[in-house]
Length: 608
Image (cartoon, rainbow, N blue to C red):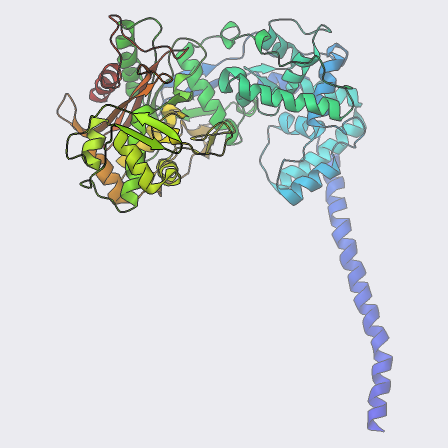
């Protein structure tokens, strides 16, 4: 009986419990849905969208770049006409279509944002999910931080502006506030900056695709910065989107408009080529850190670089003084880095045009040998271990023949000091090209530059025998950074030219914070330094490796290098030409790394 009673009580009580559970669930669901909706509605009532005219006025500010000591380096001043307002009906249809196809294919139909794009960005972590309307909101508010509150505000304002304005008005606001690169805002300034023509219906599909492609990352996609190969890749992406999304039936007859693109020298003001290279390097770093030029100008922000004014002047003096007496076709670059922090203290990419020789890859030749030596030392070899120096040697299907340079008995130490090449091919045969590549990567040579793999064959994957003879092009910036790792006993600090960003009150709003990491065994770094030991003209101790890169299969040189370091400064010097011609001085003598480049390197180091 007692058991039956308990059973009856359970049967009576259970429905009540479930009712309470359902009520709680209903309340929780109501709160989960209601609270965000209420918050959205309150934000909708309180927040307003700025007009494009107000935003454009706020953008008209000079961005100051400063040296590390706080003194002025250069000013980025908006050129006259860079902020001209273009009404919607004066934006050519081809350009409108190219921009929509690339930036927001659902723009004409969505409610201010693309839920699919946002969901994809949330799930995959790829892309920001921001369409044209949201991009305008970000630009108009000057707030591009990746925070939940900022995203909520962006969605509210995107919804509000979509209900208050037509799609034509929103597009008009957007296209006049975004940057197309080269310090331009709006399509009229962009058309003039890149093609030297007014914006009208004469624009071609190819030109429209190029301009639309610039919007994503204007400081990177400019061919004057990253080269035509990189810019053409971005152009092809936009072209394919135009076809894929029905704006064009096919791309027949379309070609990358590289020949029509004007050099920045015709639109740039107030800076020389030296300053232009510095500006572009700084802007590329800032864009990666989330501070594109438009954000800097919106916030009236100041950029403090890592450059030392005295070292920068010394770099210019050392390079310019010696190149004045050299053949007119000679070009040069010099980069100096603090091994302890990776801070770029001097950066001279040449003063011969928009091409930045410090940020352009050149074959390193025999100046690559320290990395091969590091691979051998990391495998357990010692500086006193002997290396073979045959007159002829075959490796990975390629035959090499070099004159004997290594004092006998040839060791790792004497091979590094002499500049002999064959011993390092012998060493690579022992450890393998993968180990050689890994040693260079550990020192600081990046995996890729502008989306192109480094130290690889044209397929972007294969490591050929060319790595051992320094055939693959490397940037003086990266070479100085990698040698700096040896100077720092194996601790690598990524090279950077921007130190901090400050607001108009002097408050730091962004600071470079990457710390050095141990990437090369200390004993390996010290052995490399010991083998490269040299004495500066002022008696100071340093390490130096000079080298040359051969011109094709000839015995002529096309690139000459001097790379080395003290405890406090690593510097790379490159000398070459624009067309990779035979590198000879005025009397026909072959130029080697131990000649002109080493003279420039020593002159700079004694002025430090």
